[in-house]
Every structure is written in C-alpha cells, then in structure tokens.
Image (cartoon, rainbow, N blue to C red):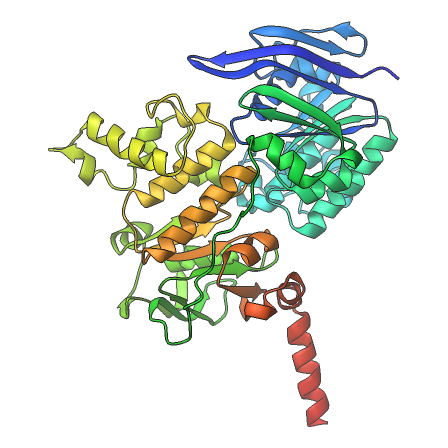
Length: 510
C-alpha cells in the first residue's frame, strides 16, 4: 500500500526564526499517525502548511500519487485535507449549526439557505459527539463546547486526510472517548488521520505510528506498539525526564494560616454555597466535570462575574471585589483557560503582553519606557524558559505552549499574592509542563497562594497538596493524602459519593 500523503524536506522560517528544517512525514490510508514534540518543535507549523495556511519555503508535498501546491485553506479542502485547529477558529456571533456547515454554505449556489435542513444536518453530526443546542450562538458556549463544534465542523468535510491538533485539550474523558470512536470509524473508511497531542495515554491508545519532531527537525518515526511513553518523551526533549512533579509541602496542616477564605459563595445562576480555604504554602487543586462550575467559581471570586451572596477574605481582610481591576489591585489574579480569547493579545509584542496588567512600573509621565518593558519581559521570559527570537516579537508568532508561558508571565508581572490558574498546561508539552509545575510549586514556597483548575486528574494528583471537587455548582468534598486517587475524585465529581450519602441517610431514617 502506498502512502496517501508524504511531505519531504519541508523548510519554513518566520523572519530570523527557522520553524522547520527539512522535516518529513508519511501517512497511510486508514492510519492514525501521531505527531509529537515540545512546543516550538514545528508540529503546528507543518499542519498549517498542509492545510494551506502557510506556504513552505522549500520542500515537497505528495498527495494521492502527485505533487501538489496548497496556496490557501480552500485549496487544501478541495484536495481533501481538513484541519481541526488547536485554537478555536469559529465565528462567535452566529449559531452552532451555521458554524458547523460553514463550508457547505459557502459552496452552495442557491440564493437562499434551507434553515431547517441546516439545523437537522448539524444535529446529526453532533449526535455522534455531544448534543449541543444548534441554534445557540457559539460565543455563548464554554470552551469545551466550542471545541466540540470545531471538531464537528471538520467532520462535515469530504476529506481523505484529517488533521487533529490538540482536539481533546478542552474535553472531558467522556467527550474524548466519543471522539476516539469517531476516529476509529474514520480509520475504517480508509481516511488518514494525523493526530497531535501532548497526552501520552491517548496517543498510545489510538495511534499506529508516532513521529517525533524536536526544534523544527525530524527525529524519528516508530511503530506505537514497539515504543514506550518514556522513549517518546526522551526523544521529544533530548534528555530523560525523571521527576515530572516537584515535591509537595509535607508541613501543611489544618492550623496553617489561610491566604484566602471563601464562604457561602453563590452567583446568580449556578454556584451554591461554596466555601473553602487556600492555605499559605500549598498548591490547591480544583477538580470537577465540565459544567461543574470550576471556571464560574474563579470568575465570581475575581470579580469577572457577579456574585449573589457570600464573602471573600484575603489575609483575614474582607473584600467586596466588584471588578477584575479591583481584584488585581488586591493582589488576586486569574489566568484564563481561554488563551486566545482572553489570555493574551495575539497582535501585540511579548513585552507589551507581559506588562499589560500594570504599566506603572514601566512607564513615566504617561509614556511606556520601552527598555524597562523589555527588561521586565526578558526577566520573566528567562524564568519560564520562553522560546522566542526576542521580546518584541508578536505573540501570534509563538507556538501555543509559548503563548501560554506569556500568559503566565503576564500574571507574575504584577507580583500577585494569589493566582488562580485555569488549565495552566493546556496545549503544553511534557518538558514545558514539568517546568510550569516547578514554577507553581516555587510560587507556593515563596508564599504566593496557588489555586489550580485542571481537567487532567494525573496533573492535579501529582502537583497539588489538596484537591477540592465541585459537582453541579456545589462543593462535593476534598481529597488529600491517601484519598487523592482518580477513583475518589470521580466519585465526588460525578455525584456518586453524595448519592450514597443520601441513600445511607434515608436507610438510617427508615
């Protein structure tokens, strides 16, 4: 059998930054071929070349038996190459159905659309994934639902090759399993799949072969059955990763002073009587299924949404925070899960992003002192091992993981007392994750309050000293020590523990 797609000796530079240097990749019909590498390794750059977003500086793309040129995404789709973007690429002001069937709408020659047909086709595609109201505006959906819409949109294309770039980064395990079932069906239909993810478990569960890039170069291609996660990680980073998570704080106890206390917090729609303490020196985790209210809780605490009742105390002082600006002034900052939408300003420079929350330290008489801004950005860039040509580069020129590092640096630039990290390692590779975990632990050791919201239970268990679990807007419980297991977290997150408690109480009463 011949490959359906081959790329050979692909080079691509962006100014002085050489993103790809002679990389190669082949894809067989009906194969899931995983592409792995650290952030900045060139994975997304190659996928953008294959989908017509970028033109290569040099190299060959051989598709279905002949060399092709892909000048734009429309041409790539016409050839039969589709891409599910790592960053959400939807129109927020139109409906779910209109987004999903956008390509079909554009190709129609009829003057009017059949609205009922559009909605029914969208419902049919979503039925295999997760039911989402097809008349809802995409901008009103949470990030996880927007990712489902992005995947559904790609599935409507008549493609011979589908590229998935971090498709499960915002999905629950249940939603990811639905996607894997669809990928298995695509394989059975002889469609070739290129799959990019930093999640080793899913790579080894669904892929047939794995190709590794490092620093824009091809390292190796291996049969998945003949390798191991440790071998792949070593090839990705060029060194062996021994301890991904830093040591926890063994001196924490119930008498440890609280940096922040939340009591009986309710919002206008979802949160109900949420109470917890964030202690000095700890990394506190917040778990829960998609829709449990994790981000809503962070928004209510930081003044990004309105709270109906309840209190927030910082260093035993009661604060009625009504806006995010007030939150920043009181040393409480929030790193959004939506990097593209509210984490960074893509068109501004790295330096301008990092200093955006407070210009007072880098300005004089209303003017930004460029060298002071650059110096601050360079300091934080070194701390986070940020990969860039210089801090005057636009953030849009960085890989997804390095954009995430800029977002974290922006939080650190205001010397906060408390940071809420919402999915801090989403789209970040194994080597960079380890660096970020160390940064979070060092912040906690230095007295900064660290609250981590994450959909990855191994991350929460490995990193955090305690984990709080939300279920349907309520605090379901906490786990620590020997009870900090995926099974216990899932019992709380799914409401099983609460149901058993109610049943036991009812049996005792009878």
